[in-house]
Image (cartoon, rainbow over all chains, first blue to last red; front, side, top):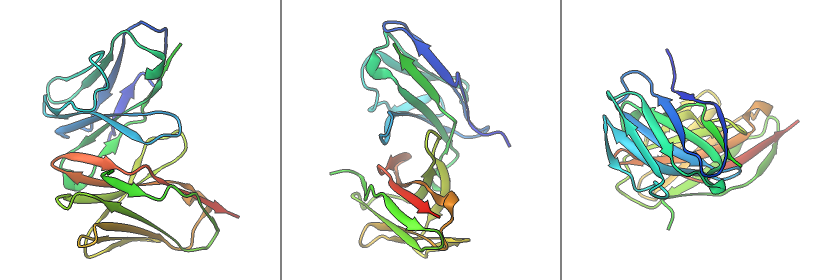
Length: 113
Length: 108
């Protein structure tokens, strides 16, 4: 079946611009996660959705970052007034139950000039 | 203290060797456990779940020791294609905690 998809695959933007990153989880997966990974670094947790609600937003680095999920499916991560330190790969993952692990999309590579 | 700790490596082994990775987790309330594999510039992929009874998938064997809060992965008969970073992951209350990964290089 279809896996997790993310768009765009690559995004180059100028400092100060807003960007929107999209994630389509595996159909039927109720949990959705956003992570960030800088080059050569580990995964940094950003936010977690269960259905449309976000029980854990603790990883969002600043108030420039926000995310929403609609219809228990697609999620959008928005970064306002991008900064160069926002450059990273943004990964989305979905899960049906915690016992089954989570499945990742291919990521969006964001470069802020 | 980090939730999950792993030796970053790299582990440099010849083809055909057996190699073992370990990780430790700090919270005894952790509920489920996994090994992921991440290739360079790719997303992490689920390799296998880890159970107290131990589980095997071909050349890969994983083991969980809840008493010691320790997880292991054994790879037998290493292949060049096994070269990757291996991530230890634990789950607690619907949140997944990732180790920083152990890098494996399998040499011809």
